[in-house]
Amino acid sequence: MTTATNAAPLMQATSLSRHFGGLAAVDQVSVVLQAGEVHAVIGTNGAGKSTLINMLSGEIEASGGAIMLRGADITGWSQARRARAGVGRTYQRTTIFPKFSLLENCRLAAQAAVQRPWSLWQAATSCRQSLDRAWEALEAAGLQESAHKIAGAISHGQQRQLEIAMCLATSPAVLLLDEPLAGMGAEETDRMLSMLERLKQAHAILLVEHDMDAVFRVADRITVMVNGQVIASDLPDNIRTSAAVKTAYLGESHAEKASHA
Ligand SMILES: Nc1ncnc2c1ncn2[C@@H]1O[C@H](COP(=O)(O)OP(=O)(O)OP(=O)(O)O)[C@@H](O)[C@H]1O
Image (cartoon, rainbow, N blue to C red; front, top):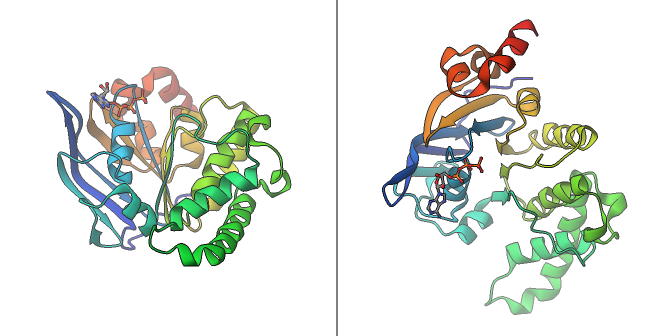
């Protein structure tokens, strides 16, 4: 499963920090995201995982450190500029428009990604492009057969898939996924993991997730955060057997299970 390469990283954060008053929510964290890989970031509640994603996506500013995308320093870029450059993200909470169809949700996401206030004359062309992108995104997410269903009426698992489809409609190269498996049953989880396996062929994926079994099934690399700091970043097999990780996070039961696998 592991596809570790020496290729130049698509996205890279170096010594990234974020302080909230006296709290170092993220403290000198470095991560590398490669095309073709799922890089999982795990950690206890409040470890700083969402704050890390928020800094990478540009939603909040970093207090220190640097973020590079394809070798360009994007640390000071706005979220909109990063999104146009290929940084896509999903949220812990659902962000779909429940009364619209799946296709309309994706078309709106695609349209929002290309919209420029000074290019209204391009509206017809960009509408057509947005529709094409919406269909491509639904297909990539395995939802094309449900395209005309109302988003509020599909299952929770499909809604999480739709969120990824909406992100794909913005043509991202990097996918920052914040707990995409939350609240999913076993079958929905399987479907989502298969989708991530497919999507990583053409994207760099950062996956924040609490479901450890799922993480170990899909991740090519795992970074473990505790209290804002990285305590380990390695291949999954090394994370499984790391004494520091066992003590700080995974707990003996998972470690025992892993050692018998
Ligand atoms: N806007 C904010 N203002 C103040 N403190 C914040 C803010 N956002 C996050 N924090 C704090 O920063 C720390 C890290 O939070 P963060 O949400 O990044 O953790 P997390 O690892 O994503 O947690 P979870 O797994 O529960 O989602 C927490 O102590 C949180 O309370």
